[in-house]
Length: 95
Image 1 (tube, rainbow, N blue to C red):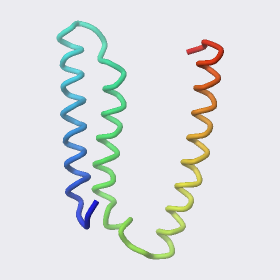
Image 2: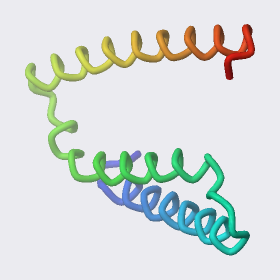
Image 3: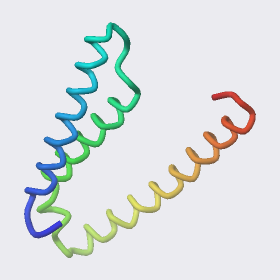
Image 4: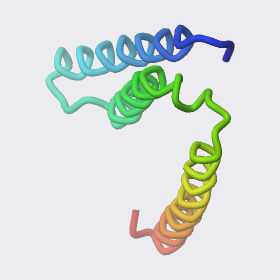
């Protein structure tokens, strides 16, 4: 990713344009936007947040290491929980 915020901003703009296009197509078709629009909007917001926070994450301080470790720990269990719930939902045809 380099040593700058530029890649995050580029990805944020790209995801924002994609979201705008999908929402525009949904409005023109007189239907709700595709579910993909919500995910790309979330990725755009996340990219802009990472661009804003990049200088803090770049630091090698002990505090930032602890924050990264806790974030990875929480993300891991959240991902496992969502995967189990969605797999069970798909298996029993709830979704």
